[in-house]
Amino acid sequence: RKEVEQDPGPFNVPEGATVAFNCTYSNSASQSFFWYRQDCRKEPKLLMSVYSSGNEDGRFTAQLNRASQYISLLIRDSKLSDSATYLCVVLEYALNFGKGTSLLVTP
Amino acid sequence: GAGVSQSPSNKVTEKGKDVELRCDPISGHTALYWYRQSLGQGLEFLIYFQGNSAPDKSGLPSDRFSAERTGGSVSTLTIQRTQQEDSAVYLCASSPSRISGANVLTFGAGSRLTVL
Image 1 (cartoon, rainbow over the protein chains, first blue to last red):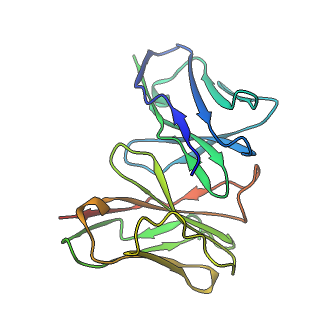
Image 2 (image 1 turned 120 degrees about the vertical axis):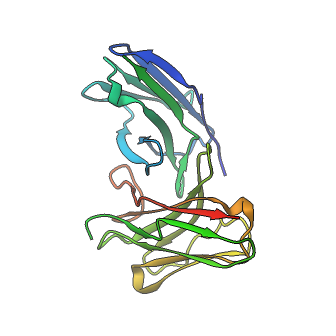
Image 3 (image 1 turned 60 degrees about the horizontal axis):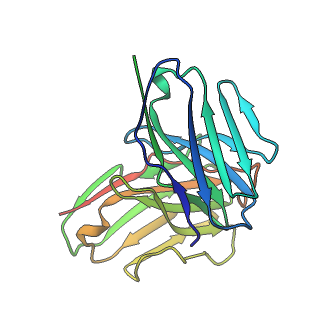
């Protein structure tokens, strides 16, 4: 099974800060990419899909670089409620999850 | 149903016992996946069902693990002769069809298995 690698963190940032996570994947044939969010002791939930041209959803921006095989997630104006683990996900024949990057937003 | 339902939510068992975990996917979803997540680890793919096709069992860690899906709906994951390393949260997820850029997974709340 191909690998999806993420910096585990934790990233500790103050409210209002901008934070970015990167993720690399090894299977160059991968076609679909996602960011999921997982709160402590909860199931993962879709945050956003990642499109080739990059896409934005409110304070969240996702980018894909196929040549370098990495995906990024940028969170602007961090809120306390953004504290969670962010999972980079790559579609092969099943969804292949990274181990996640932990974010803690502090007052 | 409105979401993916899993039962039991928590299961504590003794080493060597068999356990069954159940997943009821969202109505009409043809794709069903089982993952497991050990403490502090990422999600590990176990098995994938798509409609009436033969399941993809490539992620099952040993022959003690098996799963079936009856009538294209409810799925049962069975772990025989449980070991302590089987302790994890077992997550079921479903999607309308095979995963693509548009179809994404919806997860159940998971079954937390503890093997003593």
